[in-house]
Structure formats: structure tokens, C-alpha cells
Length: 427
Image 1 (cartoon, rainbow, N blue to C red):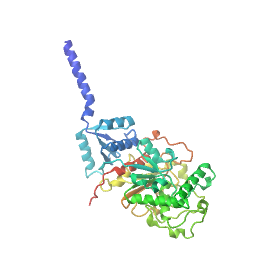
Image 2: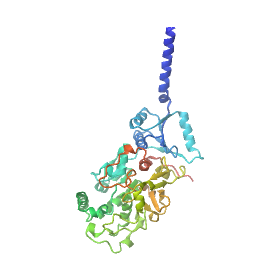
Image 3: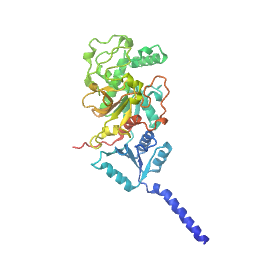
Image 4: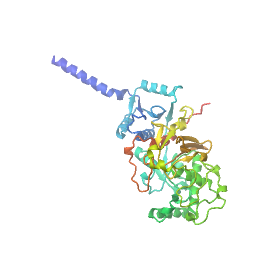
């Protein structure tokens, strides 16, 4: 009797142990859901990027549960997900096949995009830049995506060729030092001006605007050769303004010691720009704005962030996979946030540029994308998706408090977009 009980107990223990380990041993894939059940959306991108660096291809399930990821089962992947606190589900071969069949069904606005190789990431920013000075640096750091800082001399020395994806820091490519003229007596402004002028002289330029133009034109060639460009806030409009003003002087005398060209407006060349045309630069040195590209926000909205939202457009996942990738999210409306450049007037956006998000009922584009020769550009207005009105000296945004931020998800969509296998267009 005792032996029978002991045997039965042993069998039960073995059965329980088998059930405990069965999911791992039988799992064929790992589904990383990106809908509302995900505990940490931002780090989910980081794990996906990490898997790509290990040679593991990932299926991006566009419009399926918020843009989920399907990763071949691997113990190391599961461990990485657990360590980073990312929600996941093991799936059997049959379950994975059913998911893929559902996503590829012609009756659903969903699609499978294969992610193959982790893009090499660079951020255009001065070395002394702190991570919280830039939302993209915050996102990359929190998601644990490897990246490097490069700046003017690196760009001019040809270092861009080492990277697939480039983000423009909140830079002033017009050479007006961010139009912070009212702060010209403060130590940080004086040091910024000193460094920029020193770099310009060392490179043989008489003015900082000439240095920045050379940098912008080099980045333009990088995109033409197949680079992926992403920019936020003033990195968006000042880049295009500098390119348009290549053959004229739009910089007020307060910044460079000589006056603006009298025919500056007629000399603007909008064929050189990526996203914007028919804009007018602002020549007032004391005005904290570079051009009429930025639509700004009414004072009532600045006082009440709760009323400021923008809406993501829905695209055909099978016919328009690129804009679909860039707008993957678990919500369709995203809370707004302002910056030196907050949004873009529709009339200044070039025909052919794809509008990814806009503010309903207002003449404002918040997020756009386009192609230039072999490369692409994506512009995203505003400074920090989780800090509505960021001021100099404000404490950094703690993304541990915003692990499910829809606004930050848009940034990280752009990190994975270059990893996608290029598909032939349907005809």
C-alpha cells in the first residue's frame, strides 16, 4: 500500500513537472503584444531591436493587437523579455500559423513585415548633450537601443556612412543659435556661440550659418544615398529653411554681424527642401520662431493640455506598409505636446509628402513622412511627448512613469522601420 502511494505521488510529481516545462519546450514562437495588455511598450521595442542584433528575424504584425511582434522561440529572448519587464505570450506552431493566417487575410487591414537587421543608429547632437535634452535620446536610452552621438565635424568628415538611421537633435541649422537672442548674456548661450564659431573657423567658414548649411547639405546627400532621417521640434523646419536659403542670407545682423539680403525671399529655393515649401522666414532676431511653418498653438490650449490631442491616420497595411509601420500604436489619438516647432501649417507641406497625423479641426500637421531619392525623412513636431511645455532647467522626464506612452511609441516605430525587408509594390 505504501509503495503504491509513493509510486502514485512520484507519477503526479513527474506529471506536474512536465506540465510546468511543457510551454517552453513546445513553444515555437513568442508573441510580444503591443495592445493595452503590454506592461512596457517602450522596452518591447528595445527587446525586438536586441533580437535583431543577435541575428533573430522578427515578424512585425502591423495593426494586429497594436502592432505586435512575433519572435522565434529562444530561451535567451524569453530571458531578455523577463529581465526588461516586457509582457509576452508563448505560442505553439499551430497558434503562430493561425495568427499569421489571420494577419495575412485579405479581409483584414493587417500585414506581416519581416524585420531582418538592426539599423545602426546615430543622433546628431553635441557631446555635452544630456539624455533628457532630447526625447529621442530619452527613448533610446530607456529602450536600451545602442546609439552614438555625432556632430558637425563628424558629419563633414564622412562619418554618416557608418549609420543607417540619423536623428536630428533640436538644432538650429540656420546658424541663429536657436533664436535665443534674449538669453545672449547667459553663460550657456555664450559657450554655445563660442564653440560654434570655433568650429566654423576651423573648417574655413566665415559664419556659423555657412557651417550649418554645409552640414545640412551633407545630410541631404546622406538621405539621397539611402539614409533614414528622423527629426523633431526645430530640427525639422530649420533643416529645410537652411537648405532653401543656400544662395541667400536670411540671418539677422544681431547673429552674424551683417544684414539680411534685401532680396532674400525671392532667392529661396524650395526645390532643395524635403518637406516644406512656400514658407517665409522670420527675420526678427528677438522672435522665438524661425518661419511661418510652425502653426503654433492658441493660448487657451497651452493653458489646458487636456484639450490638445492629435489623431493618427489609418493606412492600408498591405498597400502602404511604410506609413502603417510609422503609426503603429495601441491608441488612435495621442496627447499633444509643444516645442519651439510644435506642428506644421498644411499649406507649407509639399505635395506628395504623407501626412501621418494631424490635429482634428485645425490647420496643423503633427507628423509626416516622405521619400527623397533612395532615402526617407520623417518629421515629428514638438519637444517631449510626456512633458507638455518643457522649459530650460525642467527636471528630466522619467520614462519609468510612461512605459506605455503613445507619443514615445511613434519615435520608436522609426527605429525599427529601417530594419524591414523591402517588398515589391503591388500592382
